[in-house]
Image 1 (tube, rainbow, N blue to C red):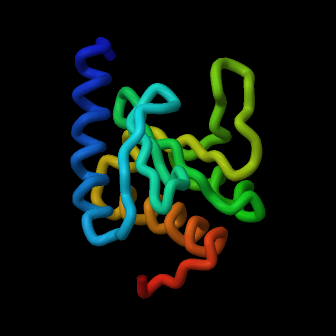
Image 2: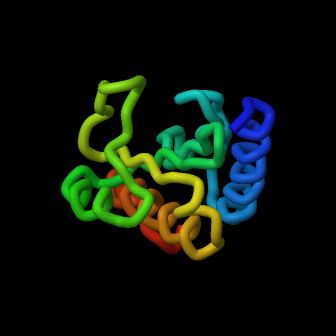
Length: 122
């Protein structure tokens, strides 16, 4: 995938995430991890990566369960440098459909709410 195509795939994912997070209070975007990260209450929830993949912050206790999902893997910060439990990389094909993206975003927001003590209703 060319760098232009990788950026276009990331930008398309960014737009989809903006739509899904539109009703979430206190959202901002930050360039990090080589992509566009979405912060909720100043905590990173997901990041749209070049190529259309997704970096997802999850509950470390669910890490093994979540990396077993199709298209998911242990996230790395450079080749061979694991980011540790709680960081999952999801390939573009697994978030290409609305259900896949919504599911992963839901897992990230669930972790965020549990970690911050914020209820689902807010």
